[in-house]
Amino acid sequence: MNKLKTTQNVFAALLTGAISTIASSAIAQEVLKWGHVYESATPYHQAALMAATKFEAATNGRYKIEVFPASQLGKEVALNEGLSLGTVDIIYTGVAFMGQSYPPIAISDFPFTMRDFDHWAAYSESDLFSELAQAYTGITGNHVVNLTY
Image 1: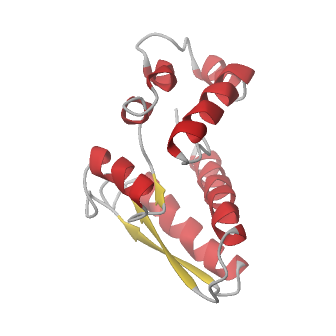
Image 2: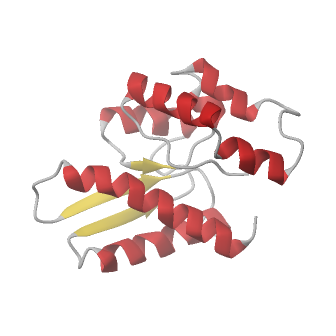
């Protein structure tokens, strides 16, 4: 996936997640925590920092996102638990870890399931994935915003 597409997906994911946070919050200013396991030199982290900056500007400083790379807030299992507990607000995670709460969603990570990028893209926009994501949300209260390839 090219850098621009990754950035657009991250920013879209961030906005979608933040909208639900904004809707339920009456606090004048809020700091959100975004945790992930990737090192700070990776495109994932760089995109998260850029999204955080753009989001703060888009909300006129009402919301700020602090990004914690390299497992600073825990490894993937702890990040998923933290999302449910409210100790972290946004995470990058793998569907295999999500599958611990709702096993059917792990189909997205099965080896050889996706033939190529086009097949993956069609799946990510399919009714099947939408149903899996909605069921995951129903069980965990967490919202799936996007998949990565």
